Image (cartoon, rainbow over all chains, first blue to last red; front, side, top):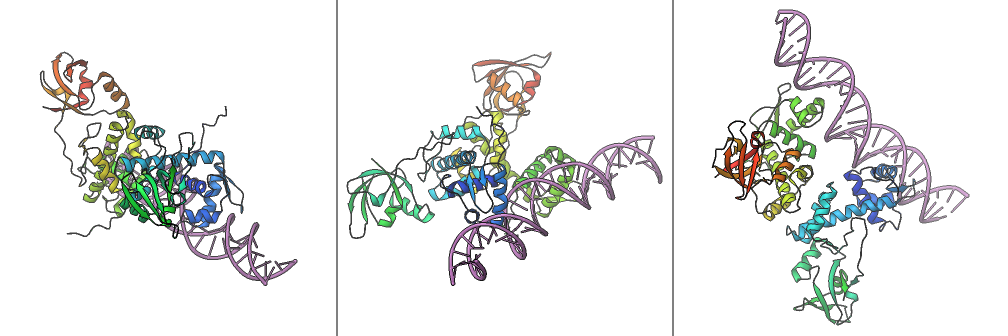
Length: 227
Length: 227
DNA sequence: AAATATATTTAGGAATGGCTAAAAAATAAT
DNA sequence: ATTATTTTTTAGCCATTCCTAAATATATTT
């Protein structure tokens, strides 16, 4: 068994960069450019150059000058820990403190950096080991494993098919508010009643009681776990 | 009405210094020396000099070189806000996440710096507007008002007097663990059954069922709200 | 009141994380 | 294949928050 308990701690800034790199690289599949990181972090490429040199030294990314960065296994694991913390806090904020979907991100962005393995363990238990956050994104377990469910965009479903809303693609405040208003929350059980061929718009039954019309565009932003 | 919404934000480090100064000055009653702040913050006097100059510029303290610092009204208000956040998080950790008394301080020290008035408002409501933290210290309200209860050391109570344990003076991990072990938790209703004149030790009835012997020293560290 | 001791401040430096401007490398276009 | 464009890096600077060492002010002794 390799002795790798002597992990160099990451600062908050480093954690944020690493998370951005993880997302931009699509979970470590692609390599990521300095410019893209700068855009994501709303900072300047020069600052990114500095930071990725440091992250390279800490071996959470592989870095070759002028050729972008690749996240290492260790980096991936750490990024997933941060994502896990972020999403657990989001569940807490929505389920326990009555935050709305579109209010949680900023606060979770701060909370995710609190350093206490025990805190996260207890929070996880307190929330009943949730597997998905309020936006339907999967919560990695403490080993970084993610059990993603196969999801399909609502506009691709056929008449009479059923399922459960598990995520949204566009999680802008405006869209989330719209969904809340029409009653199409995460977790809602839905059935496609009708599909208009002409414009792709749909008629949906929500929770076996409420009927809802939505455009193809809106439906395309809603992800459903089919059943 | 004075227009003072344009408050300069304090950094985490500044907040921590201000809180230390608040405590050392006994809530703003005394003035505090550079050396005392350095000891409290486990840092060097030179660093303190730097910091208090800045805090003086931000007008949360009054600072005259070589003559220590006095906290201003604005500083007092801000310190109380931080203390409020700290203690609310402590309640959360103990009541909801099953932390022990002696495990909460460090984590609360981090959580208290999360910037979100809404979060604190909701947390307060979620915890049912607690007035005291797990150590029995009062939680300031959102305006900084503290409603302290008159408390008496357990060793000063007479035979047959009753009350409720509301705080401890010495909140060291060892002492808290000892209390937990013997079942004398914060909130426990107690009655003095007997007092040994010779050494001042006491026999206590806890929650109308458990009898407990304790030395004068231990009893002197336990604060009781008499009833 | 002068000498000594203590407390406090200043000076200068390190690490972090940001910036601008300029140089250098890689990529695209002719 | 050479020029032009874009991307990335380097160099140099700023603010924060800490440090050590040295200077200076205040407090205490004698």
